[in-house]
Image 1 (cartoon, rainbow, N blue to C red):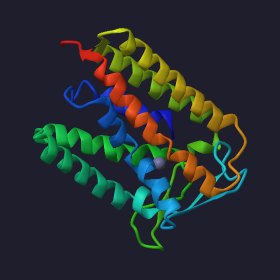
Image 2: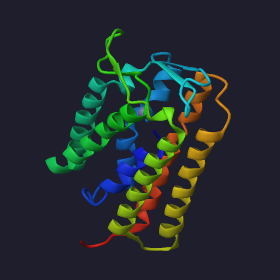
Image 3: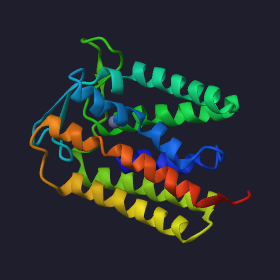
Image 4: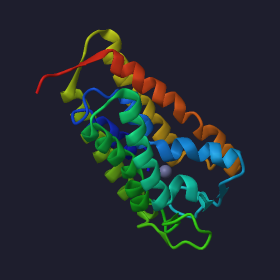
Length: 220
Ligand SMILES: [Zn+2]
């Protein structure tokens, strides 16, 4: 899943108005921000096998530290607690951030073929409902989620200047373009290439902070 993860972050803004969209982007995509680093470091492994699913040729051979259920729970707790500690935030805010982190695993388990480990053990059971076996199904689910998230964020905040409007419109357009390129573009030449390009995800985090700085909360 790609734009669907960002939908969760956009939708969560109303629940935790003091948290920047950039921080919410780190939360919703924490697993996919860590994953390329671990692949490049040789800790996790990914291959390319065109036709593996209709939507993605990526073969997630070993990725328990970024994408197991156990790791997702640990990252969620750690992220929520770290934010509370660093920003003196309430337990409610920490809990919402933890849920946003954990949502990544749930949405990935919906889309991936059964390659998502439950624990970090090598022989862990793997789950996945395989939405990626249907291109129309994948697009319908992701775009509805994204439209919903974007709608919630534009209702929770309003632009305070031109940048606030343009940065958000640009972000939405950019996310949809990357998504289209992933869906319809050629498969990456190797798993390592996929990991290196996934590092660009960090740019989207910076973009989230930029958008959020140029928008203000709409009172409920
Ligand atoms: Zn993921």
